[in-house]
Length: 65
Image 1: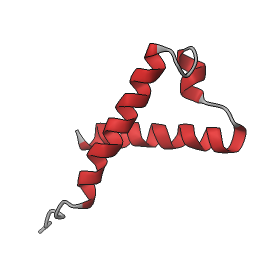
Image 2: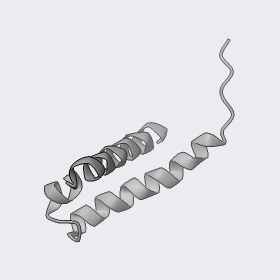
Image 3: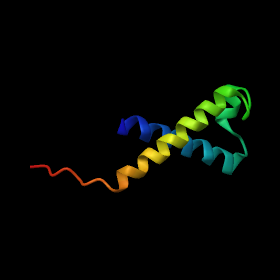
């Protein structure tokens, strides 16, 4: 679950990088505009993954022996 959430957060970060530098939204381009239901699903999944990744900040590191 951690890896999936991290992958979605990275996808979201790369999309925001493209928006910031080129003013181009890859998710909207791939899924038919920023208000299409597919785009909204992707945006929602990325947002939920970001919320989930907050828990990674507060976890104890596993001790390796």
